[in-house]
Length: 440
Image 1 (cartoon, one colour):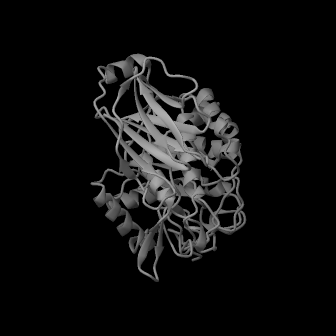
Image 2 (cartoon, rainbow, N blue to C red):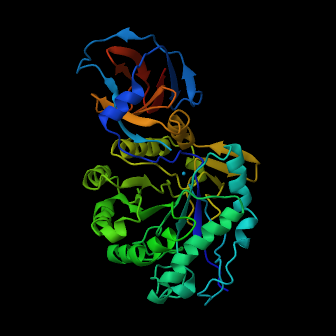
């Protein structure tokens, strides 16, 4: 049997997974009122080595009835809320399949290859989080014998005679994992369905993806024990996400099976497409399903721009309505792997296996400025900046604390205010810094 990577398990441990539902103002007012400010905590990550998620003294609140347009200010309104908060995959050291060639009925299906490392690793992470971790599964290719190129790699398409077998494959995978004590929040239809790659890949046009969901995968999931799993389409770059969503969501029979649209960042920012998707398809969610920085170079692990790439994407994607953000890898080794096709990349944590040490990139701390302070159940609130150099997003947690993340990518330090309900706290944003201000 030719081995092949079929399902990549997305271990959601660096970032939180956001499950988003829009709330109207009457709902949010009932949730938030009354609101009182008492104190603040400020945490900062900046280029000096000593500043890594460092707590610094916070200035006291001061009265400020009207912010000035000439003084940098992040303005918050907790009465206006949006999505509710609820990430990351491993590279594979080899390719493998869960069923033998030609087994259309999946009688030989088994997940033995995953029992050695993958499942124990996931269960260890679940234990560390007391089971409070969401998992997303993403297929990168059907088995070679189900495809027109008879190859797990280099693109190719799913043969029509195997549509139902492939749909059954998704359910069988999740059911077998469930027997091992690992449950799934959701799954994607196909990782990067327009990318012919040297690694595992499979091509779908928008219409082919729609018809596979409508006639096979959607009904199969609905009849299974995973009828409640969240199904995510596209799972590719922001550039075409609106067009792909249009084809799926304008077909009611297909759309009814789909929770939302997944997207990546590899062909440009295109942040406006996230906003356009939210406006055009308000009943469907969005999830950033993969992102990493590359190519790997051990000597550039500590370059500062890596973390800024993460922070910029997180702030813009969340502010434009994304329901979550998933980092591709949590941990890789000193080569940027393992990776069976030498597609070596960076991860927030690099393990130098030869020296027996862990190296934390600044992206680890940039992610932490969101995930450590914006907790499950939090709602995004209205957050606006009057300064082009400071970008920000803000969430109110279920305990009433408000976490606001502010990023400064410029080479200059800036004093600024965080303003809320006629009160403000003054703070300083050093050059190339990210700050989380927690109001409580």
